[in-house]
Image (cartoon, rainbow, N blue to C red; front, side, top):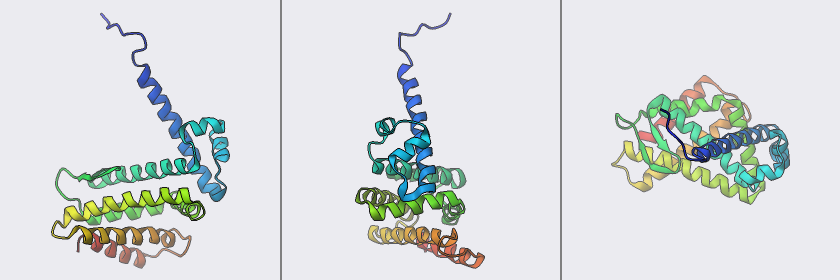
Length: 215
């Protein structure tokens, strides 16, 4: 005998799934327009790419800064998922203290390899470059980008502290900030936007990045 369900049972979860699908579609459109148009990535252009009215887009993301924040958060979530899949390192975007693996601290060499491998995706690098350019012109977007990198640094700091509990919090933070600055700056060179990638540079970059995390 099948169980009877109350009227409307499951409706909330269905609406939640539908909202999640719509949100994903809008973020996909935002990424595509940001990569293609950069500073001209207006809400109207993004809504057009998604095939919806601007009002529908603003129901989910009231301002362009809100949309950029969501785009960056999704990018960070994807990076954390790749780290978990490759190294076993699990991190929670909004809770750096939740870092860990079942076996103990993750291998810094593996972590650096995953981080640098992301720079081999030209679309991803271009997305960040265009967001940086927007941040240089728009104070609200600049605030969003600063918050994104604050969280990024906090995750790296937690990783460093876990592997080197003998280091002070201030020193771990400095190492984390330097790591992020090194890796993010390298993206411009390794992607071909501001330079050319070489095997020798990659080797040196990986070596210095790993040293920042543990030596």
